[in-house]
Amino acid sequence: MDKLIGRERETELLQKYYDSQKTEFIAVYGRRRVGKTFMVRKFFKDKFDFYATGIIDGSYEEELKAFNTALTAYGHKGKPASNWLDAFAYLADLLKEKAKNKKRCVVFIDELPCMDTQNSGFIHAFDYFWNSRASWINNIFLVICGSATSWMIRNVINNRGGLHNRLTHEIHLRPLDLCNVEKYCAACKSKWDRLSMLQAYTVLGGVPYYWGLLDFTKSVAENIDTLFFSENGELAGEYKRLFGSLFRNPDAYIDIIALLSSNKQGLTRRQIAEKLKVSDNGYLGNKLEDLVNCDFIRVYNNGSKMNGGIYQLIDFYTLFYNQFCRRRPSDIHYWRNHIGTPKQNNWYGLAYERVCLFHINHIIKVLHLDAISTEFYSWRSKKSDPAAQIDIIIDRADGLITICEVKYSQTKYSVSKSEYDKLLNRIEAFSSETNSVKGIQTVLITTQGLKSNTYSGISDFSISMNDIFSTEF
Image (cartoon, rainbow, N blue to C red; front, side, top):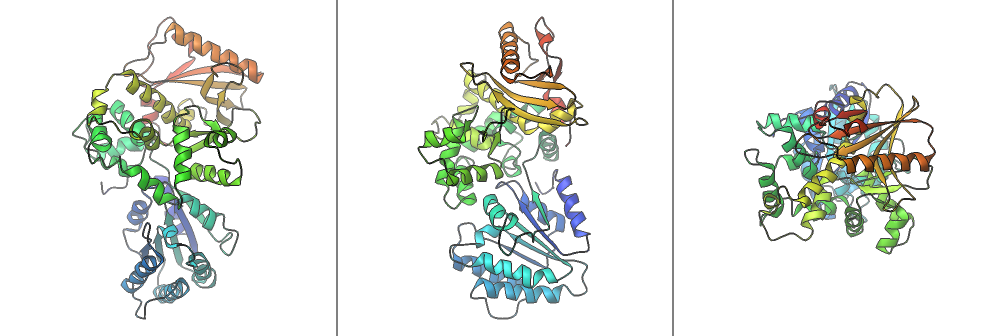
């Protein structure tokens, strides 16, 4: 796929900053494979005054050699730099000449975190380059990019040293929503219906690179088997590469992800520490913060002023991998052979809840609540056993609370008496434990719509996946 799908808001921001007529220093960050490099290159049509990229897992010598090669390619005539201070001094000299008589001097340094190898002095040299030379060039437009989100945030965005407050803008590129995934499928001439797209989304999320691996002439189940369960499945081997590219010491992060993958409702920080048998200290806090910033997990409260929060795994790929591929079955047709089974249907049901959480702002818009001040959270009972859980609560400024119940089915959903009773019990538990005086409104979020029957009146409103697909945000 050579076409940029979605990203209208991000490209509008890039255009706005480009037209600002002042020095700009912009950081683009986000999950690996989400399309950061592709977006920047498409926006500028690969017309850079300087472009260099870091090498994943490269040594100091390899990173510096690659940077020197880029300097030569863009016009540096002198000897190669022997350290980062010299390399950035050469770059500054090069840009000073290039910036003359130009509207914009565009510099793109991709995978910047890779260049910061141990004891290399990279960040100090980069700091000196920007503060003493580059920022003095009025028409400079510097874009840095990196998948190692935690590095980007700690060393650039929240830098407490020479780069403190030097960044002019940041762009956090997140996975595509269902609306843009549908556009992607249309651009690929796909004949899949929305349920097929939704099923693929519950496994791949909105990560463009993963969608680019699909063969749209085949079914969703065939694609999942090929990518995950075949002998050389491309996404079966992606897991370790993913975390290895994001974190210098990935094992601690992988342990947290594996733990959260087996706890659907999430865990508190204290529970995570206890189950992993590690100290509940700043080290663990930093790891959790890194995973939140990388869009792998979310932290939510239960509507109260509780200390900390509940951490829940929300990345679709890592959820699927840990559920089905960590101990990969020998059956190369595993997903096709489990179509219609409770195990597969339970997966789609759980994952659809995550899809709705990711699209919460779309749901608020569909419900015409976007003109009202709202907060959303999840709630888990502290008294009932097993603990009653409500995945989406929209707390509104107009005196109402909207409780959303998410239901996955391949046909119109029919509310049974048992489901009717369960929902009533959850509402009663919520009202009793929170002592809320607000009125309660219930919404059923289904895939194919709600079938009218004796018990469907439990829902004040119903919306379907079609509403989510059709809503841009």
